[in-house]
Image (cartoon, rainbow, N blue to C red):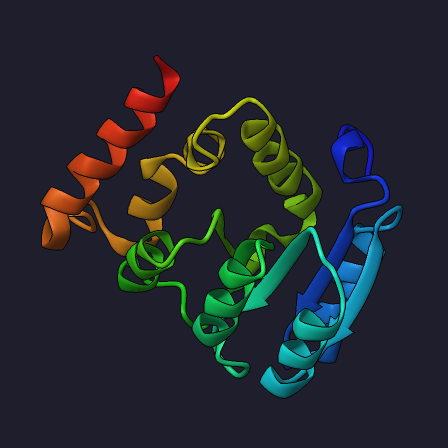
Amino acid sequence: MSGTTRLKGKRVLIVDDEPDILDVLEELLEGCEVARASTFEEAEHLMKSREFDIAILDIMGVDGYGLLKIAKQKHIIPIMLTAHAFTPENLVRSIREGADSYLPKEEITHIGTFLNDVLEAREKGENPWRPWQERLPASYFEKRWGAAWQDTDQDFWERFRAGIKEREK
């Protein structure tokens, strides 16, 4: 967890239907108070009965968007983590529904850095998507989704970029 001092002692809920992903996340988040859930119902119960700073939510298999809604209601910082739902449509939906970050599982080893970026941006009153955009530039997504991946929702992406720039002023 080096370079991620803001995470020390944070209460983090990790939700995924794959036990090996939960194991990896728990190991990567040492220094945090980690709670695990492998189903929507377990995660919902934990979010309603305990306090968390951050929830890392798989999209597929555990109804990540349903959990995102609960996290927002409980003022828990929601981070979407996905492999199978790694699509432009799910990225847009995650942003629109209030997630603070959207990470492909192939970037899981960097989870501490991404979480630290979100916490730092929130402390500074900045858009949490700004550092995400720097760490995962458009070229990252172009390699996976093709050069025209933002074309189906150009208005959204223009507003998204403008919103990041506006918060930086």
